[in-house]
Length: 353
Ligand code: SAH
Image 1 (cartoon, rainbow, N blue to C red):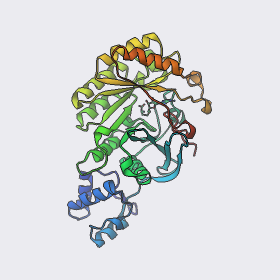
Image 2: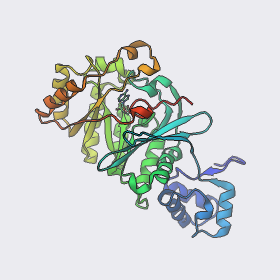
Image 3: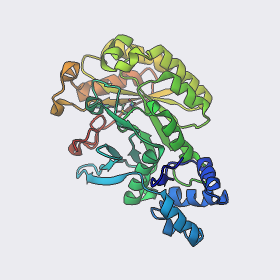
Image 4: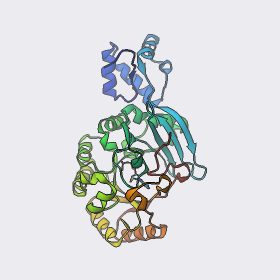
């Protein structure tokens, strides 16, 4: 559907959507593959670059279609770690952030799926800023394209959907973006290197398993107990742990992937002996690994309620906690916090533009 004077946004279309588009404007369907290739493999931002299209078609597209979705507003690089943060604008007054996290063997791009977030997790800065809007598939993909153009496409090896927002509450757009990454014509990043992180929207985890797109899933667990999850992650009241665990088991079985449990270490809340026992029980029941994440304080935001009381677990206790889990044959990573100095660390992606 095209409204008068509004250009059709091509970025974000899957191959079959592009095919339908070219048929609708009276062009042969094979043009879709050419444009797909230019947009997603060569990161073209101007129809004039698409040399294998006839000039008349390039002109027609320039008049009626659009290749841009996001605009780069700012970027900042951390002197200490090399973490690079981008601020993009997604339409009027909606700012989102993407972050490149360099590691020894890989560089991971962390992308957003919503401007703001409706979930209100008590430990997360994005939660504190509230919900603005769902991103379109084009706006999700464009974060990769703009970052790849700036940073070097070959240097970005992994993508995590762990920026602002809850991916599974923007399911259709997230699914289209995964479909584009997984298309055999896309030469970029395979789904094996893509992780979708969720706070636990159980029915959508099941739906994603049935989609046939085998991305990895990270589940923001943070506690094995419903009463604690209810307090720090209000979404747990709607989709309690048991429902999510059943969906994750189904996901792991259907896709043959291992689930990553993310676990932000909160002093006195989820770092106790009973938490270790519950984690061992849970992880033994499902192919999985645990990422222990040091809590990045929200004090700079002066939050109210329970958020004001949250404290990080000490580094020593995190190591102890990890060792106890490892002694029970659980795979544990302790995530090292990056990007604090540019407010690009986990849970700090809230922009004050
Ligand atoms: N809504 C999705 C994706 C965004 S959050 C989800 O909840 O999974 C991505 C990760 O950052 C999650 O594991 C989240 O729990 C973690 N995180 C959020 N706030 C944090 C904080 N203050 N310190 C450390 N990690 C945090």
